[in-house]
Image 1 (cartoon, rainbow, N blue to C red):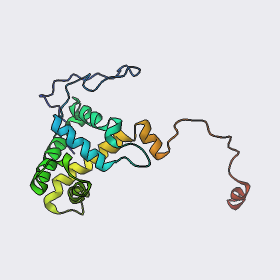
Image 2 (image 1 turned 45 degrees about the horizontal axis):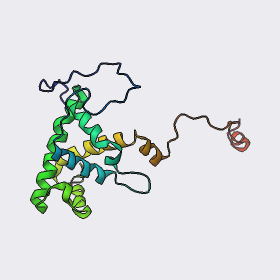
Image 3 (image 1 turned 90 degrees about the vertical axis):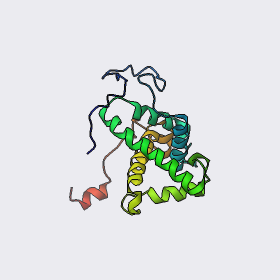
Image 4 (image 1 turned 120 degrees about the horizontal axis):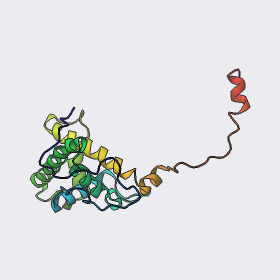
Amino acid sequence: MANLKPDPSLNGKGYGLDADLLKIYKPGAFWPLTFTPEQRRTTKALADVIIPRDQYGPAASEVGVVEMLDEWISAPYPMQQADRPIILEGLAWIEDESTKRFGKPFAELSDVRYQEICDDICHMHWGKPHFSKAAWFFNLFRTRVAGAYYCTPAGWDAIGYVGNVALPKFDGPPKEVLEKLGL
């Protein structure tokens, strides 16, 4: 398990347990954000590789996933602080690998080139050993992207989630099922 001690270099105070949930907050309203413009571009490109625009909905970056990730790793709470170095080091690795392989930043690659890098790190147990740290990052990043995306109305639509709505009247299981069960 990751070390969950607070990082004293983060100067955000947090918002406690009772933020005003009826107010819409802007990214950075509670603490300074972390991503540089380059990290935001890399995050956008990688998030959109994970959840691209398709027939089910918009791309991850179109629904605020990049902003959520920046807010997440910037938060002064132990769980988010544990993710911070993994994500920042992983984004740096992606950039270094992209430059080493293709001579340009990750965000400027073609879909085929994105896939070449992501295929090497998409599975922690099947990949080459020298990609294990990058695979650990990718697993965490993919989890955070999916979590952020599927908490949005676009994500709900993509999976057919209708929320807490009344269902049609339920008269119980069919008679045939009850008879088969001896009830």
